[in-house]
Length: 103
Image 1: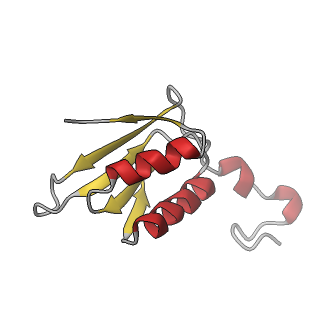
Image 2: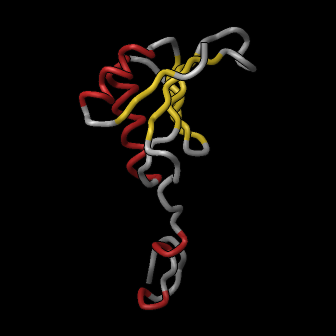
Image 3: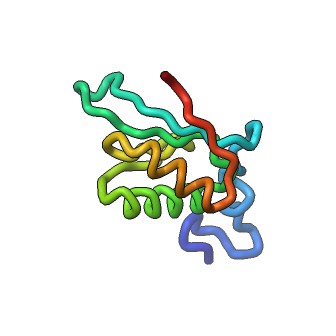
């Protein structure tokens, strides 16, 4: 029995219904936003073409790198604080094509 969907393993559809990797132009965009957060800045990382599990792992890695909190929502990594330069340098070192987004 599959623990997630409670179906026999042969009929399990968990892997088939897993969200596919985000489609885009292959460029990771890093920006800063304060809207709707009471004036507090967060750094947003969008467009990472990986699946949900890898995105969560990358979010944890970036939060650990910056020494702060954050989350992953709707395919976007949110890191508390203005850590754009540090995140861009880390993602470029990891081999991603990265651009700064916003003003």
